[in-house]
Structures are given as C-alpha cells and as structure tokens.
Image 1 (cartoon, rainbow over the protein chains, first blue to last red):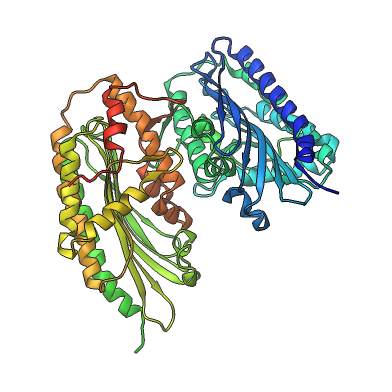
Image 2: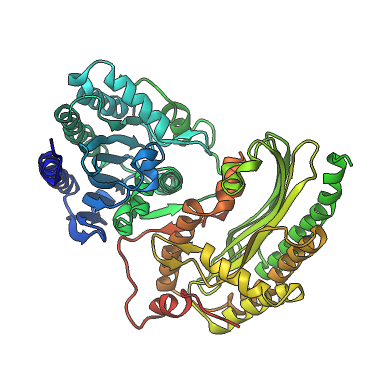
Length: 308
Length: 308
C-alpha cells in the first residue's frame, strides 16, 4: 500500500469542514449575545503553506476583546513544542488544523472562556500518516458563581459521556493540571476539559470526540454569558478583573503549549496573541482582604474541585 | 588542596558587599529623581537557603512602578535555564547573587530601563568552585531621542573601556541579539550591554567588570530621567506607552533567561515579576500611522544601530 497526499487530504477534508462551521456558529452566537459589535475577519497565509481566518471582536457591549481563529498550517518541520514528547518526528512535515478562541468580557461578572480543538497530521515518506487530536475548554471567572461552574462542568461531562465514563474525570483532571500557574501555586480558573495526543480510538471516533467538545463549548458558555452580562459592577470589580487578567497573560506566555507551538512554527503573531487581554494591570504583592468576594474567588473557586 | 565552603565565601563576601551598596545607591538616586515616592523594602527567605531584599517604588511623581532587588539564593540543583548550556552541572549545588532592576516611568518620554548584575558559583564536592558573572543594562524608549541613545551607549562603552577595545562591541551586539522579540521580528529597545558566562578573566577582573557595569548604569540613566521627566504629554502618548509595555511583558515571560531562572529555582514570584509594568494594553493588529512619532520609534530607534 502506498500512502500519499490523497490519504492525508481524505482525513483532513471533513475536519476542515467541521472547523469552519464551528467558527461560524460560535461567532454568530457571540455576536448575538453581544448585540453591538461584530467580528472583523482577516485571512492570512503561512510562510510554509496554509493559513488562517482570524475573527476578532472588540469594544462590544459584552465582549471587550475576543478572537475566534481558524488555522490550517503546513510545515516542513514540527516545532519543538510538539517534538519534545516525540523526538522521532523531528524533521517530519506536518499539517495542523484548529479553532482557537479566547473571550475577554467587559463585565467582571462574566468569566473569560477559552476553547481549542486541533488535529495534527504528520507525514513521513512511504509511511502511513501519524495523527492526533487535542484541545479542550476551560473557564476563568473573576467572581465565582457555584451554578455557573456546575453548569460548565455538566457540559464538559456531557461532551465526554458517549465516549466512556472514565473520559470526563480523566480530561477534567488533565485540565486542572495543565491550566496551573506553578510559580503562583494557583489554578488559572475552574477548569473544564483538556486532552492532547488523542489517537487511542480510530480516527473517526477521535474526530467525533473533538466535534463534541467544540459543540458543547457553545452550550457551556452561552447561558453563563446571558446570565451575567447585565450584572451591575463598579470600579472595584473592574480593578480586580484587570489584575486577575495578569494571570492569564502569565499563563499564556510562560506555559501554554499552543502559544509556544504557534510562535515557534512561525504562525501569525497577532492571531496567536489575540488571547492576551486588552487591558491588564500588575500590582506588586497584592492580596485580597479576608472575607471579600475577591478572597472568595481564591478560596472557593481557584481550587481543584469536583463540580459535578 | 581542599576546597570547602570557606573558599566560596571568600569569593562571595566582596560581591555581596558591592551588590548591597549598589542597591542602596541606585534607590537613593531614583528617590531623589522622583521627589515624591519612597522605596518600600521587604526581605524574604528562599526555601532552600538565602533570600533577598526587594525594594519597590510605586505611584511616584516620576516612577509609576519600579523594583530594585537584591537576592542571594542557595540551591541544591541548578535550574534548567542554567544547565541547558552546562549539562555537566545538573545536580550541583549553587549560589546566585545579583541585583536586578526595572523602572517603569509614568511619563512616556522617560524610557524604561533594566539593569542586572549577577554572579553564580557552583560547588561540586572536592572540586574547585566554578563561577561566572552575567548581566548588563538596556533601555526601552517609547519616544526616541537621539541624544539619549548616544549618551546611554557612551556610558555602556565607558563601562567596558578598561577591559579592552573589543568588549563594548561584543557585549553591545550580544545585547541586541538577546533583547529581541523573534515573534515580532523587533528589538525590545535600543540595547546597551549584555554578557553571560563571563569567566575568561580571573575572578577579580570579572568582578571588577561587573562593578563597572553597575556603576555606569547610574551614570547612564539618571541624566535621561532628569532631562525627560517634565516633558509634557497627553492621552495619545500614554496610550502608546501602555501598548508598547505589552512588548516588555512578552519578552520577559517568553524569553528572559533571568525570569525563567528565577521562577524555576523557586525564587520569590512577586520579586521576579516586579519587572512587569503596572498597566498594559494589547490592541489587535495595531500599527502606527506613517510619519508619526510612534512610527519613528520603530523606524529609527528599534533597529540595530551603532550609537557611538
């Protein structure tokens, strides 16, 4: 049997179709929730092949800055962020397809949300393509609401349910471990799902799982945005939000594999760093006062918990 | 000959004395220039030995946020950021002494400045201590002034002059290469000096070089602060400053060896991340308009140039 580009594109085409559709559906729903701003689209080409469609929404009624990016990048050499765990794939050509999203809302009572779904296919001449899926979604509240966290994790659990009872606990735990700021000894948020290197099922089933994750993100986030977007807030909450956004920046630049993969593979910097918040503050050695809602975030929400 | 802790402390004591004094002198001069705010001091202990003295100034008339940190950390295992280039020193115990400084001024016409001087001594039982020095200073203007850049580099050159004619060009070039944002294809600022792994001279001469770098930083920065601190500015300049500060964050979290060394060796997070600006913005895909002073920064100053 010969393996050629035809085989890879047979795998890729349905993934690409799904990802385009996912990007469209998410943007439509977010525009609907925002009610004011619209996504602006830019397409870009990658230097070694492929490219992407970046959609950015700014200064909305609900969303201060958000990006929903589709990319399909081809390269001759997998970046270090991917070959650290797979040294045998150094110098292999690859295709990476994904949708990546970060939403930074105006209102501190609306949590920041992140979704990523991706598929990577590596081709070595004369060998069958090697592929894996990765992604997940996680939520970063500024003010915690028990019911929001429960709903978020119910949707995460529902996304996993058809694939086995052990999947949600496994990928929920992985999410808690991954979105963790070691230098602060602090979780980034209340978690959700994280998976990578997924190829233990056949391609179709792994792809079906990725689709379920993408589709459940919408069901997870939209009701929370709708519920909190009109919550009254003042300067104190806003200041805390800007301060907490600093943690998001620290995580993405210090630890995030996706950010490093993107920058190392020569991806479009402005699209990759779309994840960074529009306004951020760092206050030296600041701690919330005991008994405040700000302290409650750390004590009650930024701890590894079983939400469902 | 036996090598013991006595030998190491013979090396360390004068370095420590100099660094304490340097911290004091710099803080005194910066308080003088500020005229309003004073440095607040905190001492801290490192979990595996040693500790530091953090001095922070906030909301001054001139300095929005600045930190001048002394640290002397002992550890049983050199962090990855140091052993990448020296695999033979993995698992060796070490002492790291340094002064590290970042100043973020209020006024966009006053540049951000960075200084670091450090000495690392590694001990392996029964062997002579291995040591090296590193550091440098570099400047990041928001609005460029030719005379400031020339003065800055004249002081950098003067610091190097007694050690040979080739030293300034070598460490100036290293600085340009080090403080470079690969993902933006953009220098962080107008450079200065950067050196690391310095042990080609004897200990005393390397130490003398480090002292000269520390002392010349003061002569380099103070006149620029004095000259620019009363320059009138408005919202446009302030916005550009906050936007450009994002590059500082990107560099320090994505690339800076000192930041990674500190965080990996379990240093005090709040002291290490003192380098991050107090307020920062990220604007998606923003470009300065042609012919503006903001565009001039990129075209005329953020390029590798011979300033003296």
